[in-house]
Length: 366
Ligand SMILES: *Cc1c(COP(=O)(O)O)cnc(C)c1O
Image (cartoon, rainbow, N blue to C red; front, side, top):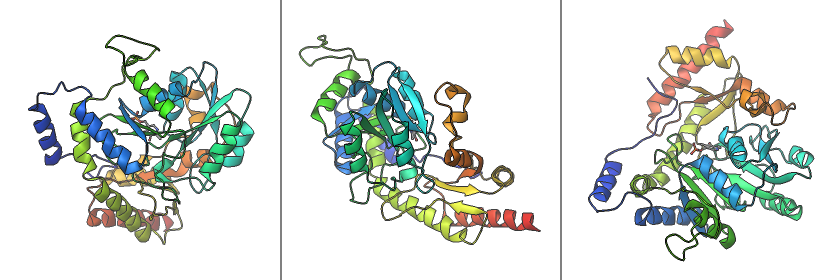
């Protein structure tokens, strides 16, 4: 069975963990986490970097640090992983959905400005699959901040992907958030990353993560916080994964390129464009005619796929959020499919998958 996605952990991770286990550490967040966060900070070129429990918690802590208050509205793309919107609820805010651009799947610029209301506190820019929007994100942030609205980047799928001016994705918002869950380009099982250049935000997040301690003694608290610490055990895995990141970025690009070349002639398929000089595609994504039948056909041939996220506006969980019609995200919900995208796929695996897809559409046409 070729799975749609599986993480890759091996001897190197085992070695790092064994070395750590014999070092006398307490397993919780300490020096190894510090080292891991330094590496990420250098990789993305941000001033501050924090590790948290997961990407959902990263988003939540970010909004707390930004001062979200109950009832505040946060604009969220209607095509994204549910955690983007759920993190808003977890901080007692209300997500308001906005449709996405067909070419980049990022939140649509004009619809975003139409959706702003007096209750709008912030906007979450998701960069799905490492894609950045067609408009200028620096200008977007300026225009929003002029209205007192913050811009948070949910870059969970964008480690290894860059903007056109070669800044790493996640560095243009006031805060950028990443995830280290098993499906992401590198993983520590669970894990989240927060990056920022703002010293003020950084000092808030440091305290929020550690029970609101003010640093003047083990039990002095000058604000409310919680326990959102990482563990050195995970950081040991993270350091091993970091040694593979550059190679993985190349692999992700190669995988996408091979699929797009081998499937290029099929009119039934629209692989969503990537600029491979900047983007490391997380998953191979596209719009497919007869998506569900194709997915079933591939499953019978031991090939896993995954339907792309359904529009949040049509999910039971979000029925009270913001009704409306969102044609692009609704079309993705009907036709969007992720093809196998693990870094351990061989070129033969991809050729086999592509021939099956071609066979499916040729047979259907007869
Ligand atoms: C994976 C993901 C998250 C959630 O991250 P977790 O670490 O699983 O909590 C949030 N937003 C997006 C866009 C994601 O892809």
